[in-house]
Length: 133
Image (cartoon, rainbow, N blue to C red; front, side, top):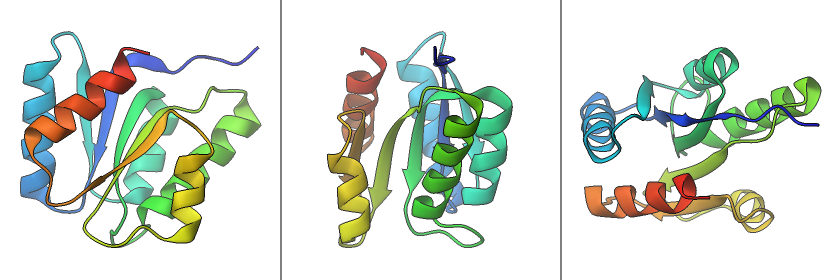
């Protein structure tokens, strides 16, 4: 039996501080009772997830230190080794989605990708879809 992630916790991972703060504020406002945590790169994301088991991760793909694909792989490995259900993941990118990332998205309906620049509405709609599951 897998340990469930916390559906009341969302992790926003982006190396652009202004964007990250905007996402955190918008999601905190749109979803009362949901706690939204920021992380500035993939390594921070992996550490934050290990602590709080967020039910949803909003993951920028292109970041310094550790990119979104690497962070996803680490979170997935941690979930597998600890018997934790994988969180829903919304990747965000301003670039063409790599084949590897597209395969990750296609293999599970709890994963999606938003193209940057994205509107707050796009973000809220994507989160709504994942939180209502």
